[in-house]
Length: 425
Image 1 (tube, rainbow, N blue to C red):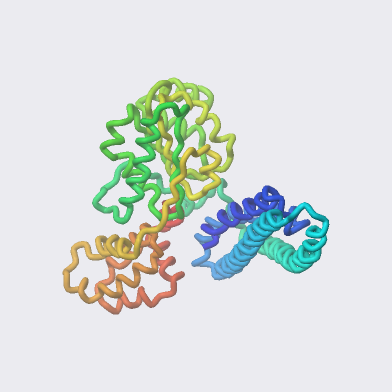
Image 2: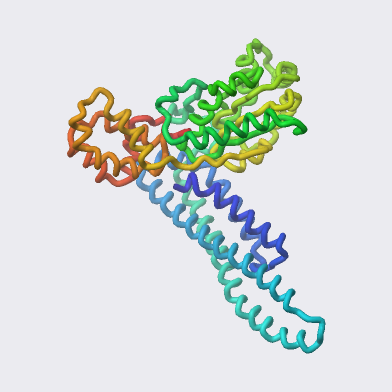
């Protein structure tokens, strides 16, 4: 899906361009402006993808627009792979050539001709990549113009429709309903406790959990927040659902209220000052769940207010974006992958077979396992499908779900949980 893929393309695009400069390998000349334009267009498109994904199932024209966009991003990914490979190869060839050179005129003359030939051979390849980048830039320009007709709502806007309301998360969780996250739990728990116990490290540590929508970032944070070792380790624990838009005053008041402090101030400055006083000298764990803003200015007041916590204090951030993880100044980042198909099936069957006879389970087990594979390792998708299948009581009904196209499966999920599914966490 473009919603998950475009942020990665933006990051990789910048990384490859910087790598070319850093390695002093000028393989693709004259594309700086094209690259900047592509990054700008992708960033603009990224802001409307949440609205586009919500509408694609009910508006076929939006679905077609997204399919075109996804084709462009796949093409861009291929070009970046090719460009990255060329930089790597050119760097190695340059290193090897320098190692072979001897300080004699005869060797220099001998090496000149093959080097020239090698350079000439690379010219069409360089030109080809530049042309592909230019073509993609043009395709994105058309895509942006086409987007105007849909009047998408940009991330950070304040919509009137209740379709855009966020589900607010809490720290409460039933651990018995969680599958496939033991390894992630152990790794991040070790980071939290080791960072907070380490000597000689200054300042508050910031650990970000980054993953796709529906992968279980909030669930992992809830498990960590309620862990016995964590509860005993920190003097103060605080859970805040940040979501989007990033409302500074709401977040500031929530931090104070969760810390047992009343907050009647109307302005941000006194709230931030009270946060600084409340957390000063205390070893704390602050969970900021579902962070979206990439605006550094919105985060800075909180960063300044919290920096005087006791050694070993930890801020745990959950987000879909590595860019957000960078903006908040993460000292460690944990990339949350997908769970196994078998774990998806365990989630599905726990929900789908609640209060049902074992006879149906035996008949549809194979079908259910295949449906679980379509969840692509996303716990939220497995929960959604389990809730849908709870109302299917025959083998044929289960088979119909399996035989549906993937967009039909997504549509069923959106119809069941329109608010929850849109801002999957």
